[in-house]
Image (cartoon, rainbow, N blue to C red; front, side):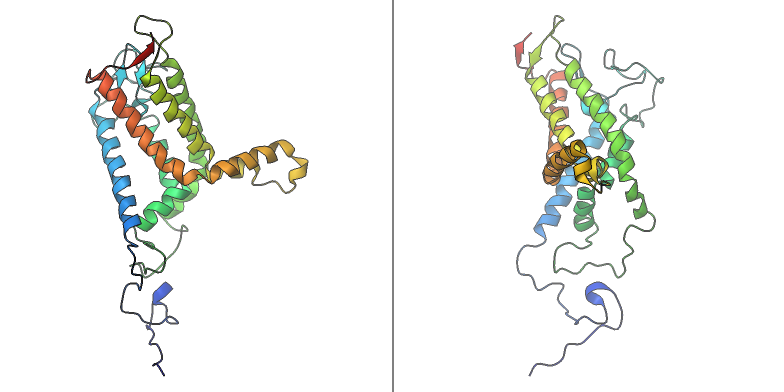
Length: 275
């Protein structure tokens, strides 16, 4: 007969008094650490790239075709290059430590940071809470999202409305970009890049859990609200792809900015279909 398991005198979770003491961090033999590692690397790569590009203030506008990178939209200061201020100039020159996209970047950051999927992603990969199923986390206590700073996560529903406005701005930028080098209508590879990016951004924004709740979450009788119920079912289908869209849009944002940077810096020429 095996000996009775020993217990820890204090703690919570897998370290609670009623749980057996296991000296090994986990009994899993697979590479459970790989998903958290890849998530951390992916998030770090995007944050690093986006931070650098948001502050360099170069190669973000292609005047011939009206391509504007989403990292600088809307550009509303006197520091913006001529033509890139689609919504006018609201403020004067900005110091270098303020990004030209300062109007929306805080709200986009807040929307992404408080997103339900991204919470799961960085809770597990960065804070290791928990890093994987059946793997003990290093924290000895857990208060959830009821105290500072994590109680701020509950503002996600409000950031959603700002995200809608920003996506509308990006849509306007994509439409404005149908501009030829000699004026009038134009269509090039850059337009496809911008359109794909904004389409996926709409998918990510509308697939948000807050959007699903706003559309039909409070309804108690679906049959009395057939239109809202139809929208709720469509958003629910889109919501199942929220994680994929969260990652895809990080990639398309970086790709769109990178393409505009290459064209704006004359590193490559935009492939034109109609000019």
